[in-house]
Length: 416
Image (tube, rainbow, N blue to C red; front, side, top):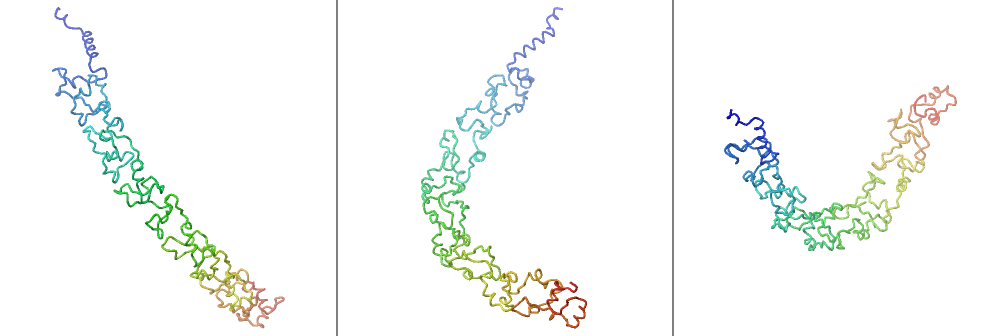
């Protein structure tokens, strides 16, 4: 009985256990079994039983962190108090010039930075061409003290001295843009051989010149005119074939000329009066007064009155044929073949109906070449008066003549 009285009761053991739990040096946040780190040998961490998976925490142990003594990161035994951000354990040698995200440049394996090019590619200024070969201190003068102050990314932020020293051309006097990439390539290893994009005024043909000063005569490269006449007024004034000044030619040179070397050949857009076939290839002066190209009629008769007057087959003047040449003629192949296209609609169908293809010459019906108002039906058909008189004896007012034929047969069909 005395021995049994020495054995603690169950409630007493529970109180003892709870008191031990409350006095845990690891705090209340660690809820893992003690045997994952300790053994009955003592409270020191036993490597033979240690099985805690640090990768389940906010800071997995990789690289150099796998070799660090636990107490360096956990100076107290309350593990939840350990920081998980680089800057909370490591001194910021850059003095806040690159931010707090150490992982942008460093890895747990080493402090040495091996991906400087990639870092710049993800930033505001990729390292291209000569910038790839430049030492850090060339752009970051405080790099030796591990300070990387934020830099401007405009060319002029670093190259203002080059801009001011340039003389061919003088960038300052010429008021050239300080955006260097408009003329220079970031991948080139020298400033020479600028590649200025001149697309707003293409330097092609006669404008493909290497001496900028030929057009930029005032030294100010931002104030050069793009109008042809501004540069070529002397050419305009001195041109005699044709005389541009007296002919009052427009000063928009591109209306006739291109940038091909030289001024000729000129190709004026003549769509207002298409120069097709009979009008193609003629000397401008055949139609235009060399001293006044702006005052010319587009009416055929104005230029071709002599052709109209001298035509005898048929005689246009005697027959009072219309002076609207386009009623019969086109510019496709000279004056012939002519086709009086309104004959069917306004007079008598000869290009359609029963007379289509039954004649070869106008004179088959119009025997009087000086008067096309006269015509005959009787010479083309196998008619004779006695036969026609017999066939028309029941027709009141019948007469044997061409005018009567047309009156009764206006479309050239029997029984009209």
